[in-house]
Image 1 (cartoon, rainbow, N blue to C red):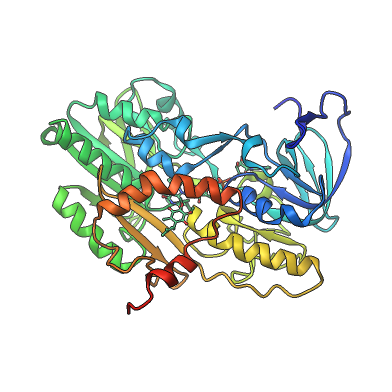
Image 2 (cartoon, protein in one colour; image 1 turned 60 degrees about the vertical axis):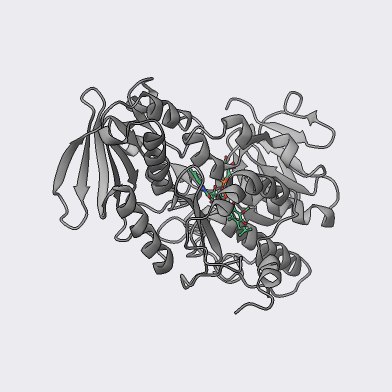
Length: 435
Ligand code: FAD
Ligand code: UQ1
């Protein structure tokens, strides 16, 4: 990006054309990242602040509702269904700096941006999400850029549309779906892509010519036993091959060959031919965040108290979502619950009080298992199911698929405006009178 833009979301004033670089700006609350977490907390706190007291630094033009990428891959939704311009989703009285933070200096209470601005803050929320490292797999970027390579990925707005194109082009052979050997957001998403492919092939009389393979680096199909048991039944019933502890290491696009390592026997690899290869890339927190050793743990995540989401080192810093060290499954559903806790705790700390609201690790994963079925997993830090509805959510249900396809997108955009903090209240109401 050549030039940062300071945009007052309300009045649409663009300061960059007149302001010189290397300006210093000050704010009461700085939010780094305008994705799911950054926007939601901005909306929840905006009314407590005067105009321009909150700055959101976010380089992207659009906010993407990433959970919809699974359905875009299946041809059910389009990329324009999944995004809104950043200026539309940020609250009116915040200032949006369209730039990226390049350096965090938490001891000095300031950051510097790619275009050379320094921003001082009283309080900071870090909400940068995860960085996608497609370049870590030799051959992958080349293959993704080639039009008819059969290589696709649901994790990026750049490549997700290739998934449905690859399904339509598929004639016969292996359709392989991968989960990397790194932390990742929505660990259920790679297998959802495999279930949708299986359903697409059946619908289009291609299933007899297809071997559907899910190669995952993890030692389990899903971290919560109740849903793992249900998912093993799904893969057996659909004749999907699942290889645990199997990690994609390279691709030869010209030959349609992918090489996997056996994580149980380091150094042991095997090559497999593919007709279609749907890759979930290795991920880590953004490089510019990881390099600030004072803020992050050894794995590069912002070191926070897992109950309060406050930095373990800086009382005026909090983190939300995928970049935080809290050991929950990284999902929008987790962001929703965290946003309520963080809004309460930041408000308390700003008034000189202790942060007392507690996040229980709630996360949810709508495991879409076809074009009209979904297992809705919900659980906490202890991997104990925390179901909202008064029926067994480990079953493949059409109602939960409709919720995923038609209701959750609206809930997400409401969440970004501060109107959704997770299903805790709904769960209490739904479960009245039930065990
Ligand atoms: P993001 O929403 O990714 O936002 C991070 C923002 O920070 C980005 O806008 C980025 O541009 C910005 N940023 C990065 N670096 C900097 C910097 N240096 N300076 C300034 N800004 C920066 N979740 C569910 O709950 N249910 C699902 O079904 C589901 N399915 C998914 C399927 C797929 C294919 C994917 C990819 C994700 C899915 N998720 C799902 C996960 C969910 O999208 C993420 O967990 C959620 O978006 C995390 O929110 P966040 O705010 O932490 O990060
Ligand atoms: C949720 O809160 C959420 O965040 C907006 C999601 O992300 C899109 C989800 O997928 C789910 C399932 C939830 C939880 C909501 C309910 C009603 C169980």
